[in-house]
Amino acid sequence: MSIDPIALAAALINCPSVTPASGAVFDLLDQELAALGFTVHRWVMGEAPDGPTENMVAIRGQGSPHFGFAGHLDVVPPGEGWSVGPYEAKIVDGRLVGRGANDMKSAIAAFVAAVSRIDQTAGTLSLLITGDEEGYATYGTPRIIDWLNERSIRPDMILIGEPTSVDRLGDTIKIGRRGSVNMWIDVPGIQGHVAYPHRTDNPIAPLARVVAALDQVHLDDGTHEFPPSNLEFTAVTTPTSASNVIPGAATAQLNIRFNNLQRGADLVAMVEQIAAHEAPGATVRARISGEAFLTPPGLLYDIIVDSVREETGVEPELSTSGGTSDGRFLIQLCPVVDFGLPNATMHKLDESASVEDIEALSRIYERILQRALSI
Image (cartoon, rainbow, N blue to C red):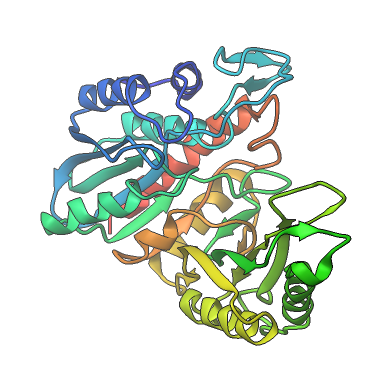
């Protein structure tokens, strides 16, 4: 049974699945995979705000080699101003339009379609699909890893279908990702009238000193594989906006995207130390989204690069640029590489993917599967 990747991608798009996702979109994928001979395991866990999240592990075959495909069915909220319904997939000027068309329901459809065209006579195929990649992943891929570890299931290699290409399909493969940590620096004060400052304690000046000190920090110069680590302030707030009130607190929000020369906990400790020096009494809250990771050169590189080159004639760039992915968790299991569609429209209004690219991506995935299962 050969599956049409465009039809399947459209059907997945038509199932609203804002993160954290569960329900109908998983039902649809379950049905397609069961018809292809996969044993499908699904579970929902967690409560709001980080849940409930649905996860799926689908397995076909047995023994080595074990090739895994990882992806997510959740999407970001659509926003206002679409030219078509975000959950009513349409083909417009050769492009499939709808929320998730680019990130990353089309890649999942392309992979399932590729699986439907191969004759698997050996080895194991698995799909590791979460409903919480766009959120905090509290109940997402880390819980899939727990499920696999409890059953001593371990893929030999994993391909993540995130949209990694830049200008054309196949030009970029992500061999690693930077780590990310969000922090909030809270400086306490005493609220009062601006005309009576002696009765207050203004937190803004000490917070400004913290911001200035952190702005001067040089984290590193990067590596051959990674750009320099980067600290950016994303917000400065106080509880009041009245022009005649000294606020009782002030908060700075920042994000650090860091390479594999750094560790999230060490960066948090650095910020805590600077905050304590510049603004005694300040506290730091932190949420580490993931550590930096890098997959060393090896068989997975060769399989994907050769498959891309054969299908497109393009020589892919091996990159660690851009945001993070669930590879930050899956690297615990085995070598991981991200490869998928051109990513120019992900998270945008009228998110879309070229029909031609989706079909070509499915053929690349088919080549990858043929190579991986013949090892």
